[in-house]
Amino acid sequence: MDLELKGKVAAITGGSEGIGLAVAEALAREGVHIALCARNGERTAAEAERIARQYGVTALGMHVDVTKPEDIADFVSQIENTFGGADILINNAGTGTNETILDAPDDRWQYYWDLHVMAAVRLSRSLAPMMKQRGGGVILNNASICATQPMGHEPIYNTTKAALVMFSKCLANELIPFNIRVNAINPGLIMTAGWTVHAEKITEGTGRTAMDFLSDVAKEHAPIARFATAEELANFFIFLCSPKASYCVGSSYYVDGGWLKVVT
Image (cartoon, rainbow, N blue to C red; front, side, top):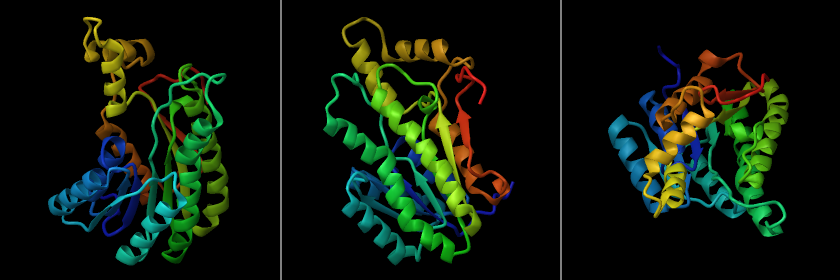
C-alpha cells in the first residue's frame, strides 16, 4: 500500500533508540525526511546518518533535552532551516517513573511534567504554525495504557500520561480546522531498553533471567502473552501519519495486545 508520505518531513523526539527510532525508520522507509532529537546527541546523529544513507532521505540528528525550552527552540530552528518546516510531529520522549506519591518531591513531579506534557505543548505550539503554512499535518503523542489503567509503582508517569491524552484531545479540537490531525497512542507492553534494564535490576542475584521476568510480566498482563516489538508499534504510528487515516482525529488508540481491562 502506498501511504502517500513520500517527501514529507517528520520531527521525532526520543529518536535515538526504541520506539522513536523504530518510527523514524518506518517513516524513512516510506520516503519521509527525518529530524531526530534525544539527549544522547552522538548516538542520535549517528542514527540519523545511518537512516539517511540506508533510505536515501535527508535526516537530521540533534542533542536535545526536551525538558528545556531553549533546547526545543534550537531543534525547531534547525528543522525550519533544514526543511522549511515539518508535516509530522511525533512527541515520543519519555520514560517510566518509580516512586510513591507520599515520597516523591515537587521537583520530581515537575521534571516528568516537563518531559511528558510540556515538551509536547511547546513542540506543538512551535511546529503547528508551520504545518498550517504547508497545508496541514499530523501530530501524534505517544502516551501509555497507564493513562487509563495505572500501574502502582509509577504514579507520576500515570498522571502525566493521562494529562498528555487530554492535551491531545484539546489540541485536536483546536487544530482540525487547519487540516492538522492530532491523536494519542496508548501502547501496552513494548520491548524497549527501559523494560530490559528494569528486568535486569529486578532479577539480579535471584537466579532468574531478565527474559524470564519479562515473560511472566507478559503472561500476567497481556492476553496475547508477549511484548510487542517497537517495529510492530511503529507500523501503527505510520498508518496514523498517512492520509489513509484521514478520518482518524482526536482519539486515543490502544496498541496493547488486549491488556486494557475496560471498554472505552
